[in-house]
Length: 167
Image 1 (cartoon, helix red, strand yellow):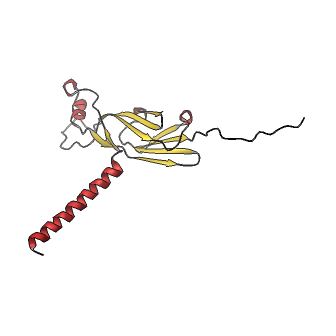
Image 2 (tube, rainbow, N blue to C red):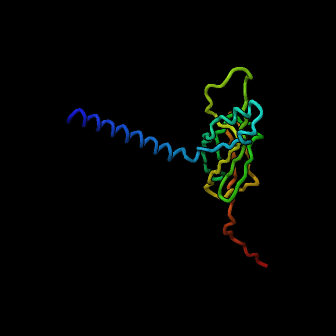
Image 3 (cartoon, helix red, strand yellow):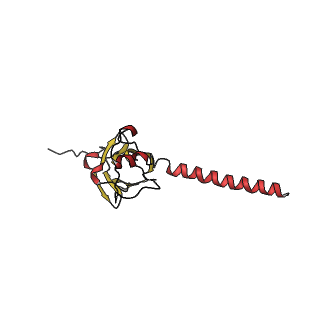
């Protein structure tokens, strides 16, 4: 095999490997990729924090984990940098919908940012639920950047035996 053919073959293998990696990433993380919408349009931004948020990434990852047990569905959503009151959680049809707003939190007013990869603004993530749930009995907690929502399973009325009393 000539040197040129070896080089071409090596590049094809590298490209195939890279493409496969991107396909796997897309398959596993595409639902976690979440759009963050600025609270106001760029021309309306006034404060330094609003200007920072306006230049920030419009996309962020909110990775989720859904665990089904005999009694409940437990959803964990990685959402660092938020306050517990920033979340609005609801069940719509067969989806758990988590909405919120991530605000800029600056440690200091001095200096300038040279890298801005964090996403800020409003977001919404819809997570499919595997079974019907009792949304009225749901509980949520937020600790160490992870939102945990426990949704008890909705027990469908099943057949039950009716005893006949003897008079």
